[in-house]
Image 1 (cartoon, protein in one colour):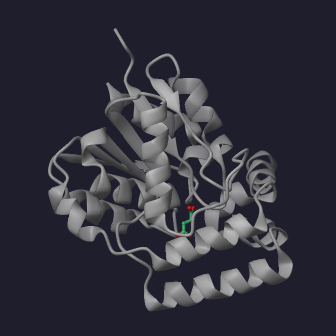
Image 2 (cartoon, helix red, strand yellow; image 1 turned 90 degrees about the vertical axis):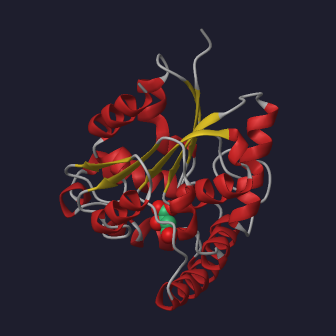
Image 3 (tube, helix red, strand yellow; image 1 turned 135 degrees about the horizontal axis):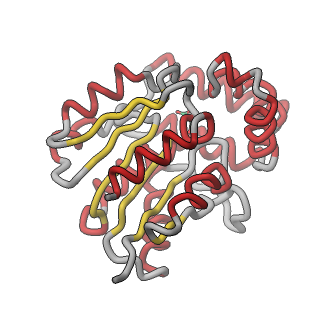
Length: 243
Ligand code: MLT
């Protein structure tokens, strides 16, 4: 029997290698796809400056790979893209997984933060994000874990300044898609690191409660990067859902 296709959409400022542990673990159970978004990782095209354009890229990928209806899993910025994809192309989605993300747009405060981040990218380049993002992304404990910290810094250091700026513009301009929560009528899963300070467990639980028949799971001992910080629990949650 043909295995179901799972498409993993990475976050910011990362690339598909953030999913290495999931790709290795899930490959026997489903047909796992983790494309590099435009501008990131090995991608040869420029980064999009709108979330809708990132979603169109995923649609093109799904069509070119002839995947049919997919299980779409988005982490953080990848979750913003998954919401947009579901709004624009629901006929391509069989189930949805949202990890450490939100349906809402940026608050006025959040938009100011994006402007500042864009300025920092223009002045200091990618290094600014290598040095300053880990403390927001990882739990205090994992910030002390050399293996995790060096993996996170190494992925960020490979990303281009121009792509970082475009993605920041895309996130700043994205629209509020909370209205979609009531409309989701396919199986869905919401996952959140218990110590995530960027998209908190409370916020993600609320989103999950707004969706019919959805599942909400907390990843222990993890901050925002739940799939890297506690990959074994994250993988088990994913596999249970896929089954
Ligand atoms: C991400 O992990 O993709 C980003 O933290 C998302 C964001 O900055 O809103």
